[in-house]
Each structure stands twice: as C-alpha cells, then as structure tokens.
Length: 339
Image (tube, rainbow, N blue to C red; front, side, top):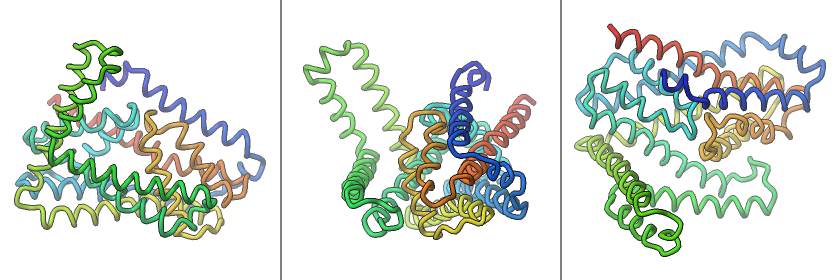
C-alpha cells in the first residue's frame, strides 16, 4: 500500500474519472440535472447498494468454492476483504496489473499455499475470459439489434466476434501448452527487425519473464482442475454469469430511478460489449474512457439533462464505492497482519 501511495497512478485514475465526469456534466447538465440528482428516489439508491453488496458476496463465494475444491478453507468475510482490497489496487493501477499479485499475496497470508493462491487467481481470469468469449460473439452476431449498430458497424462487430472467439481459443491453448508460447516468443525475438530494434539482454528478459508468467498461470489452472474439473467449471461459469448480470443490473436500476425506460436486454447487451472493450483500456480502472464511453452508449436512450446523473451514480456504484470499501478492507487486513 505504501508503494501505491507513492505512485502517481491513483491520482491519474481519480483525476481522469472525475475529469471525465466534469466533461459530461459540462456538455449536458442544466437545472433539471441538479434537481434530479437531489431528488433521486432513495429506494433505487438502496437497491443499487444491495446489488453491490450481493456482488461482493458472489465474488467471495466464487473464490471460496475454488479454495474448498482444493482443500482450503478461509472465512468468507476475510475473502470479501481480500477481494475488496484487490479491487482497490486493481482500480488504481494500469490495466488492473496490481490486482492479481496482491490477491495472490493476501491469500497466502491467509494460509493458502502459493501454488493454490496462484491457481485461484489464474482460474478467475480464465473463467472471465471464457464468459466474454461465449457471450460477446453471441450478442454481436445474433442480437446486434439490441446494440443499435449501423449495418457497417454490425459487419465490423461480427468480424470482432470471430476475433474474440479465436483469441479465447488461443488463450486456452497457450494455457494448456505453455511450451508453444515460448516457441512463439523465441520466433518473434528471432526476427531480424526485432533484433535490430532491441538488445539481446532486453529480449532475453522479456522472453523469460513472459514465459515464466504463462507457465505459472498454466500450473495454477492445472492445480485448480485436478480431480474437480467436471463440477468446478460449470459452477464457476454460473457464478460468473450471475455476477455480471447483477453488475449490469446496477445501470438498469438507476435508469428506473430516473424514470427512463430502456429495454432490459438493451441495457445488458450494451454494457456487456462496453465492459469487454473497456477491459483493454490500459488506464487505471479504465478511468476517463469508462465515463465518456458510458455516456456515449446511452446518449440515444437517456434525455440529455439526465445523462450526467446516470453516469455519475453508475460510476459511483460500480467503481468509486469499491475503492472506498477496498481502502477500508486493506487497512483492516494490514492491521491484522501487523498483529
């Protein structure tokens, strides 16, 4: 946490997030905006809070289920704290790069072996990739009308869907055969152009580091699935699907609170594609791109004065509240570790 505090990335994340919100407010807000914000129905805000708490519990159940499948038991409340602390660091580091190492570390501090902790984190990433690999192509190919895409964008979306499927298959294959990944890396760094642009020491460092991470990921998956594959994967896919459906429902509840009717399937479908794309934004927490992007995808569906209210409340319940809870959890775990 001290390293994170000394880093400039938290300031970048929060600065971009609030900066983007101010941009949305500046272009769309009027008197109706502020009145609606102050008069937002408390029942819908309470429902959003309830969904967020449910998300914390589902994520903890998902981690706990994997741990128990490997013979490990941790109090579910502690798992919730570990997950929240992880979400804090992930949200304040580029491409969420700080999340997996911290989650692995905190699980080992809770008594889980390093190999099993790495397996939990690896499996979480794999199942999320599988979820999007199955969901996004289906949405883009069969239900593109829910996304309000033009014919040209629909064609591009279908091409993207094929790319997503191929990418997921490559990911699974690389996990199963890390040696193939090493051969590919060696081939790439053996190209004359790459040799001219990089030093031998840099090529060796990048190659060995990338292979080491992929091998660790592969070994973690193997540990998780040893003897439990038939039940583990379906249950995790179910919990992951439930998690994202609830996550996407936050926007649906907020729209209801604003008395704006958007078909539920449209709200869910747009967010699924949106979050898939945002996951590739290297900025901490996708900040800036998330706020502007969310305003863009719902700009046609929401009256302009209400758009900043939707974006601000949505970002609070899907991002800022996790940072607040994550900071509290991180502090609690740090005090516990110090004793």
